[in-house]
Image: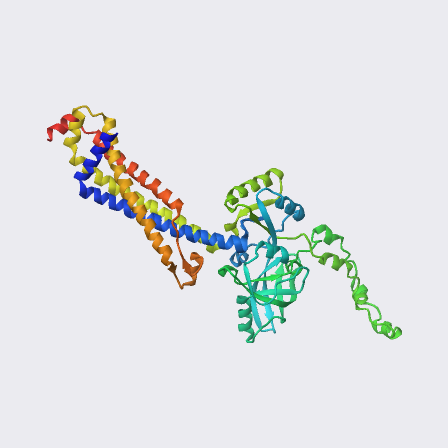
Length: 483
């Protein structure tokens, strides 16, 4: 082996120009690969940490009819129809909270509504119905209250609005709005039609982490959002059919109303009795106390998210449970998903560049082999086997790849370190979303270094195949005649 390496080194030294051309291409490719993947990995990790710690949790549980969880406003607009509720919620919650590896669970209800004030001010709000105590325990530091207070357990008829929603209302109403003012929230659902709730502003908040796709989120009680979403306890066809709607107009509005009032002046008019029995209406209007759209999960080890999602989906399928588990990114909206897409595109571009580099390296090596036909023929004539010639060509290529590739990786790590120390700043709001904030400080990605090492070795091996086949095709007699 030492003899083979010495011969390979001598050949590379004697063809310094070609060696430098090939080496420079490899080094530049490795530098770009390390820096690019380190920047993208840092941005992706930042976005993942941002969303999982503040908005989505590590895993999302939904009814199996849900194709993609829509926790952001873009998901709410693209969702078709009402989001299905978690079947057998109480049993599901007990199962999940006792499951190995799950640290905490947080149920949530989503809604989309129109907010109005004074008949002129209006805005769109994405409603989050939460259990206040459980939500704040699950996300202890994700919001910053600017005015007022957060929801309190058991409180109905209140809303905690985001600064973006408040600014929209103030701009369209042309006046300042403060805590204690009431707004009308209107939502439509397929079960009970249009619903309007008058909600008092309990507080104004903003998310601590950057979340442009969640800037119109407002928090309301689960009772209020269930009414707005039509999440009634008796919404089945059987319950509707059982309701007594047999009263005719005479029963509801008939009789001598004036006469009855005149003959019974001492008693107040009972409008409930005048309009008829409302017990059936009240029955159908009761909210479903177990209706939730999603359950967000916090894991003891977030790195286990992929495994746990697969495991839970397998358990749900085996038990015939109509549930589905999703990764955090499925509910994080298009911005977070686009970051992953950009990383995939970047890696495919690197593959294309690698193919081009292999072709260039291959052609350069072919020229080098052609120039050494007499030398290779002589080696064959004095007893060098075909396997020895093949190993010599592969050793030369790998030596270039490892040395120059290693230099490129080290240079990439150095550039990444400089970028991390200085930071990549941007005032563009769109870029800030992808960067996870106004400043991105990339760190060297261990995965990118390993990928680069594997890539450089593969490039060296693949690039040596064709030149080696040419070298093996050289006949000693023919080669000796060219000396």
